[in-house]
Structure formats: C-alpha cells, structure tokens
Image (cartoon, rainbow, N blue to C red; front, side, top):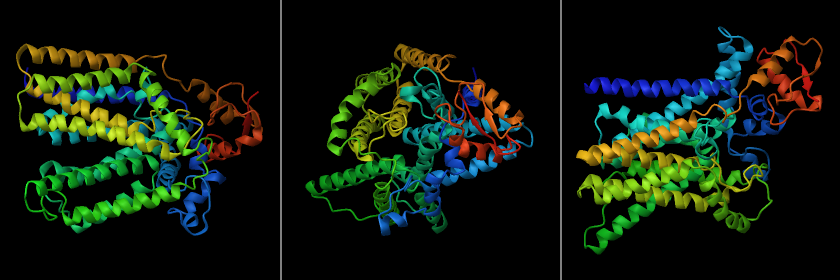
Length: 481
C-alpha cells in the first residue's frame, strides 16, 4: 500500500480516538471544585487579587492557592466565556458539558502531538513518520477507562485537567526552544521578541501550580549535572574548558534558564503558605510514606507494570538486536535519563506537602510528569526499534506493539469504568424548571459538588454559578435528602 495511504490511515486513527475521547469527556459529570474556582468562592478570591504572592512575602499571610494565579485566572476566563459562546447554538445545560469536553480533549490532543514532535526531533524521523509516532502513543492516553486511576493523563474532573495536564502542556511549549537547540547541538539564539514571549510564558508556568515547578526543578538539576559532568570529562582529558556558546548552552540560554530558576524558586517559596497544605504528617513521615505509596501506585492496576515491562524489553532489544550506532547510544542514554528523572522527581515529591485525598502521595495527577516521561520513552524506543529491526524480528516486534496498543485501547474502552452525567443533567433540568427559590432535588447524585448537598445554605456558590451560566433564570439554592 502507498505510504501516503498509511499516513492517512494513521491520522484517521488519531482523529477517531480523539473524537471518542470527546464523547467520553462530554458524558462525564462536572466536578465539585469547578464552581468555587470559577466564580470564585471567597476562599479563592485573594489569589486573584495577589497574583505573585506579595502578601506572603511581606506579611507572611496564609491563603488558598498562593502560587496558582494563572491556573485560577485561565479557568475563570474559560468557564465564564466558553459556555455562553456555546449557548448561541446549544441549550445552557449542554453548553457546560461541551465546554468541559472541548477543553479536556484539546489538552489531550496538544499533549499527544507535542510528545510526538519531541520524539520526532530526538529520533530524526521523517515528517511522514510523525503520525506513526503519534499513533504509537494514542493507546497510552487512558481517558476514563480501565487504567485511568493509574495512568490518566487528562482528568475526569476538568478542574484537575486545568491544574495538571494543561500545566504540563504549557511546560512542553516552554521547553521546546531549549530542547530543539539541545537536539541539534546548536547554541540557542532567539530573536528578542521570542525571548520576551518565552519569559512571559515562564511567568505563567511558574505561577500555575507546583506540578510544573517540580518538573522544572528536576530538569534543571539534570541539565546542570550533565553539563558539569561533561566539562569535568573534558578537563580530565586535558581539553580546554569550553566557553558558553558551544553546544546549546549559549549565554542567552543560561540567562533564560536562570530567569526560569528564579521564578520557580520564588513560586515554591510562596507556595509553602498555601492553606490547603495540611500538616498531618511531618516531612520525615512523608518520606517514610513514599516507598509504600510508590509500591501501591505501581501495582494498583495492570497498566503501568505492562508499560514498564515493554520499556525494559525495548531496552534489552536495543542492546542485543541492534548494531552499535550513535542513534542506538542516544536511545539507550535517553532511557537512562528518563529513569533518573523519575527517581529524582519521586525524591522531591514529599516536599510538596500532604493532602488527605492523596493518602499515599502518588496519584495519577502528581505522577503526571512521570507518566509523560514514560510515554516519551515508550514512543522513542518503540519507533527506533521499528525503524532498525529487520526481517522476522521486525515483524514479531510490530505484532507485539499492536498487541500492546490493543491491550490499552481495550482497557480504555470499557463502558462501565467511568461515571456518567445523566443524573446530574436531570438535576440541572429540575433546577431550570423550578419556580421556588430553594429547590429540593429528587436525584441523589452530586450537582457541582463532590458529595450531595444536604443543607441548601451550602449551595450558595453553585447557585450563583448556575445563574451566571443561564441554567436558572434566578439564583436558586438547592439541597438533596
């Protein structure tokens, strides 16, 4: 079959998978933090008036989301705009679920395509192979099915997608110029306007929450350690100590990375005063929880062990079945660096504090940098082997990759593995039709809450948000017995 047709089929496979993800996301209920974040609730108001935490710096104040201004601002802007725009063609209730599905699916598509582009550049793959790389990654995006709890990239709760998956998407965009220069071993040379835009994006990423800053901390430690090790090797060999500008670490790159480091350190500092950080466990106790948390997370479902087993097999195949070359050494080195990144990230994880809803510290949201690293390693090593193996070995490996992809696609397609919003939609319809100011809902499912609201006075924030979205003609408080 013509290569053009194969490319078209692969692209069609990706589009169909994203369309299926959209449908799944459209059917998910709205989460319990959505209304409080978007309105915002009183406990989230201060961060919107103090984007850079001056109150923490000058008065040592403690309040919610001290270093998450841009996550809250972006979420508020989107949810106060998109549902109303969609209401030009949709009814108010449907507009909420379409807005949620649209954002989650676009975030998934962005992460998928950016990861594929990262792998394409690292592997030197031709442009036409971009869709093959992306297709290799598609099955690993567990949106709401069987292995979601362990490997979910986007979240069933759209609020968490804003705060975690979308933050990692912005980080990948931010790192692209540095990664591109490093892969090509060319000094980073950006025009002034691109450098200025990059600094602006650094500010957004640094004040978007701890997940991106923790990832940056590990990556910068790796960059610094790798550079120092390389220069030590040159010194021991009697070579001249290189000046900046050789390789990709130009003076501009060092200045930009230094700016990013300063912003992240400041963000981490003011993040200590986030009132949501509980003191249930001391730092030492959190480190004692970590080994058990990692073990439980790893064996909780079958998805992650299978992925790690495939990566180990890829490593061994690259060692034994592929002749030595620069490309082979680069793949093996990259797999090693991914392993070191995961180890360093896990060691930093207890510093992020303790949350009761993450009793073992590690969950698919906090593990997101690890998951993206594993996806990158899988896509890179699998594509390398598909391009290097020959004969029956290549055919056998292709069969294994297809079986692995089918295994994950089947798990993600399980219809009973995710919640649906039918009950919540019915409750919203009751609210829309009700005439009284306080409504007793007949359903037993939560409505814009994590648990059913039994006291109508606790529905104030949700009632204001539903009125803003034109779900109700006036503000209507509600409760469920």
